[in-house]
Image (tube, rainbow, N blue to C red):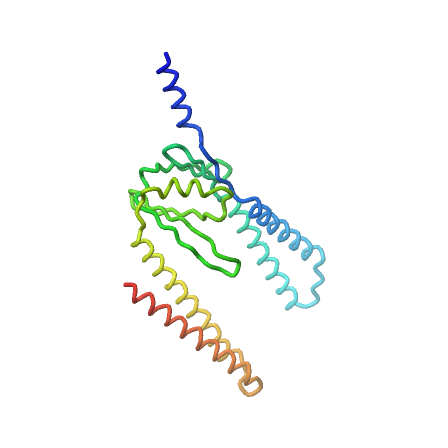
Length: 229
C-alpha cells in the first residue's frame, strides 16, 4: 500500500512544475506602456488632424504608421513571449495565452551556448540550446524574473557548442555588412541624385563621406566573416 502511495506521489511530483518563469514585471509594464502610448498618440493625431498641406498630411500619415507598427510589434511580443514551466525532467514553453505549448525533454538537449550581447541599454544574455534533432532554440535570460534555476538545470553537464558560436558570429558579421552596404548606398544615392552640388556643396560632401565610411565598414565586416570560414 505504501509503495502504491509513493508511486502516486512521485507521479504527481513529475507532473507538477518545480518553477515557473514569467516575463519580468518591469518589462511587462514597459511593453504595455509602449502599446498604450502608441495607440493614444495615433488617436490624438487622427482626432486633431489639421493638415493644411499635402506634405504635412503625408508626414502625419507616416508618423501614424510608425506608431501603429510599434504597437503591433509590442503586442505580438507580449502575446508570443513564452512562459517556462520547469519540471523534473523537462521544460514546457507556453505562449499565445496557452494555445501553443511545447515540451522539451532535458535529455534531448545535446549542447548549449550562453552568448552575451551588448546594446546602448546594457548587456543581455541569451541561452541557445541545440536539441538531438539538430534544432536550435533560444531563450532570452534577462527577460525572465527567475530564469537562473532553469538555466542551471538546462546547461548542467551539457557541452559548450563552439560550432553554433561560430555560426552566430558569421551571421552577425553578415548582417552588419549588409546593413552598412545598404545605408552607405542610400547616402551615396542621396548625395548624387537629391543634392544640388552647386547650391549645397557641404551637404553633398557630408553625404559622400558618410557613404564611403559605411561602405568601408561593410567591407570590414564582410572580411571578418570570411576569416571565420
